[in-house]
Each structure stands twice: as C-alpha cells, then as structure tokens.
Length: 219
Image (cartoon, rainbow, N blue to C red; front, side):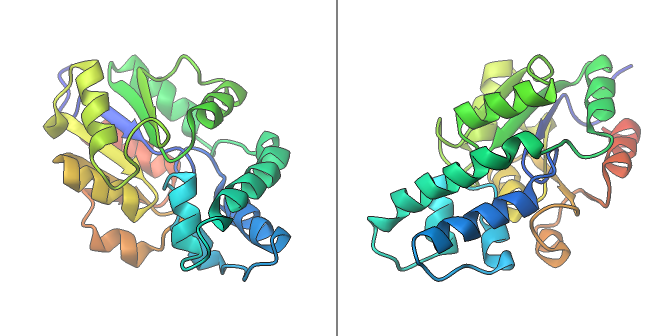
C-alpha cells in the first residue's frame, strides 16, 4: 500500500520511546548536589533533555566556571549509569515500532544521547535491529541543528520532505523545521504542552497508542 506522506519516521529516544525524563532530571540534580552547586529546578533540568550532555549542563546551569561543566557531565554519568538498567520503554512502543516496520517505513533515531549510551539502551530494550539508522549528539551537531535529519536521510536515500521527526521537546520540533521536515509532538515527555504547541507540530499525541493510531491512519 503506498504511504500517504512519509517514508522515513525518525524518533527521539529519551521521553519519546524511553520513559526516562524523571530519571534524567534527578541525575542532573544529583550531579549538581555532588559538586555543591545550586540545584536546578525540575523545569530547568527537563528543558535541556535532548541536547548533547555538555551543552545540556551549560543550559541548565548557566554562568558557571567552564571547568565545572566536564565535572557535571562526569557526575551525571555516574548517577545515570546506576539507574539506566531500571528504565523501560513506554507502554505500546515495541508494538508500534514492529507494526511500522512491517508496513515498510524506514525507522531511525535522532537523540541527544552518546553513541555508547544509545547502543546500551537499544540493546537493553531489545531494539538493536529495529532501526535502519541512528544519529547521536556526539557524532554531529546537537539539536535543533538540522544535521541529524540531513545525515539520516542521506544515509538512507530518503527525502527530507517525506520525513517526520517525532519528539517530546521543542529541540526535536525545531530541528524538523530547520531541516524542512514535518514534526510530531508527544505530550508525555520533558517539555510542557504550550511550548510544544508553539512549534506548530503536525500532530500532538497524548499517548503512544494515540501516536500509533495517527501514524497508521495518516503517515
């Protein structure tokens, strides 16, 4: 059956496929506490999810001595590695990905995680062979720069105009805009609904099953 709008569906990872927002926030806060720094609020910490780790720390805690940020990253990784084995995919994600793959869509991931972190997460979730291509923040420009989507479409021989980016942050939706692709928001992740709506996504899903249904009917 010919696809209506899209050939390539690109997913963000944290807060979109993996239920990790609260854990990431707590790990950022714990890293700041370890170093005796002012602890960012939940909103400040959640806002930077999706950015590369070094950039995320600078945005969450601006104005610190530049030498502090690598130590923040180190402490964050310590706390996150202690918890990442507890993280799970959102309900309905494996079924949605399997269904979309069987329908012949190209599937990809564009994430602020490192390559090592994403590979570990994919392996733990049993999804190593699910995606046709993946891009991480330590391999190219961080969101909202369009490079991740540009590189994924080039690697897979796809058209940016027939590509959709699905994510829980404004960083994801702005990346899609910057690349000339479509964007879909999910409302159960890191960024509040009003910020997502301001990016004018093609669709905004309250749950994974609602996203799955929309893709089946419209993608």
